[in-house]
Image (cartoon, rainbow, N blue to C red; front, side, top):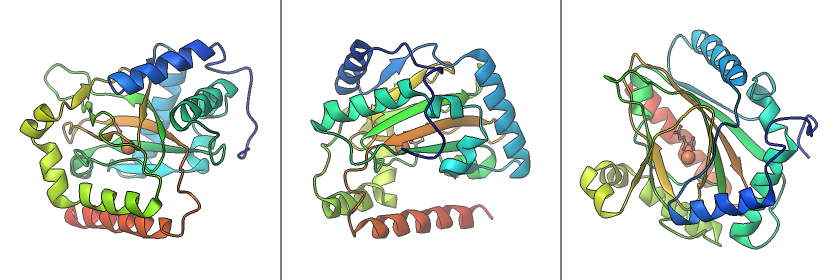
Length: 261
Ligand SMILES: O=C(O)CCC(=O)C(=O)O
Ligand SMILES: [Fe+2]
């Protein structure tokens, strides 16, 4: 159990076992399973105020926050702590892996794309380190003359790697500069059957983050695009090789920061 208690009287309490089955089939089929209209307008409004407030603290520049601190002070905490949400995440993991998850920890992340640093954080194709990813769109650009920053994915391009070291080497290659230039190309996206997923606030999008190479498309530097990601089930969490991939990710982040100064 993670900090804070789970709440039964909260969003997603009416999600059934059949809903989880349906999500899983959609994720296996076209890459994404969607729970529609499960985040209320008032929760979205509050989440947007939270984003606005945080963006001011970050001087209007791209930022992302990871872990238990931000979620505790965000309105999305109600989703994060709900029993229904945990049941969906655990149910999906078990369906994919045929056994219980290594822990019941969900890792929450918020991303706010804004300015030129936001552009640099677009089209960064990657595999997540977790089997199940849930994405809640908070703020998506909607003017007809501006790009919305859609999610693009190559659904289920690989299987979950049983060995951590294989996973780390493969991620380093796929997420290299050359690799990313390849995935960004429209031709490669067409040939490999990439899917463009337009995100509608109110819905929750589920996909196999560890199997599906994915990134967000860019939006205008003067627009704000914000998503919350919930990662669940890292089969390699106890591996001694984990620190290498963490260091690689941190170094990549520093390089992106340095290029926009
Ligand atoms: O913001 C998005 O649309 C995707 C972000 C993502 O894939 C991640 O943070 O792992
Ligand atoms: Fe991701």
